[in-house]
Image (cartoon, rainbow, N blue to C red):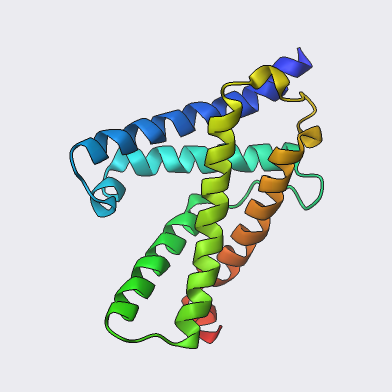
Length: 167
C-alpha cells in the first residue's frame, strides 16, 4: 500500500527520535552533562540513523529544493564541535567576526536538526493526519527546506576548516 510506505518513512524517523529522547532522559537522570551524553556510542549511532531517515524524508518530500539525501551526521557533529570551540574562545575573551560567523552557521545546522526532531515528536501523536503524499505536509516540507539549506552550508563550511576560517 502506497500510503503505508510513505508513512513508514515518518515512522522510522519517529522511532529513531524516540530512542534519542530516551537516551537523553537516561543520561540527564544520572546528572550527566552534554559531553557525557555525546560520549555514549549508542547515542551517536542513533543520531546517524535519524539523520539518514531525515535525508530519506528530504529526498521524497522536499520538492522545493534538491531533496538531497547525502547530507551526513558529520555535519551535525562538526557543528556541535564548532559551537563548543566558539564557547571556549568566548570564555577566553577571543570573540572575533570569524567566530561569530562560525557560530551562526553551526547554530543553523543544530537548530534545523532540533526543529526536525520536534516535528517528529509532534506528528507521532497524529500520524493519521500526515498526508501520504509527504510533499503536501507543509510543516514537514518547511522544516526539510530549512534543514537542507543549513546543512548544505554546514557541509561547505563546517567540514572544511580553511573555508570556515575564511568566513
